[in-house]
Amino acid sequence: MRPYDVIKKKRDGLALTDAEIREFIAGYVAGEIPDYQAAAFCMAVYFRGMNPEETASLTLAIRDSGDTLHFFIIDQDKISTTFLPSPVQPLKFSSCGIYRRISVYSYLSQQGWK
Image 1 (tube, rainbow, N blue to C red):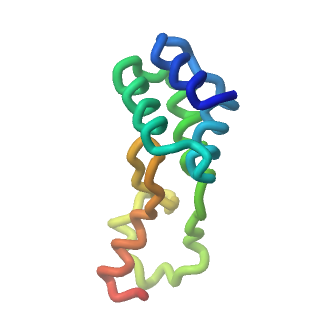
Image 2: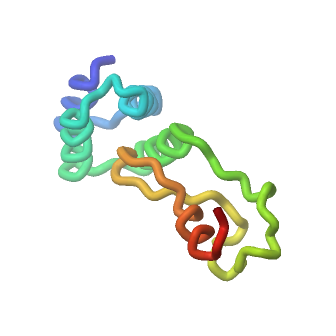
């Protein structure tokens, strides 16, 4: 499906399928979808909203689009567990899935980890 079709569908207030959302995010991450189309998608989502299934699909597509930090490789004694959610899970900042950043990185760098 073309990015334009996904944007148009959301602009018209229709629900997106999991496959459409995942394909859009994968296309953007691969550099196949330009920034202006990602911005148009974000604007359509802002004005039309997303149902819970779409929101879950977008969240999982963003999560699966990048590398994941697994905490079992980090010495848990050196991390303040009051900072991290329970159970410990990787966190990602996102701007509608456009930028992939791991929030724990900033915390660990403040604690002296390199």
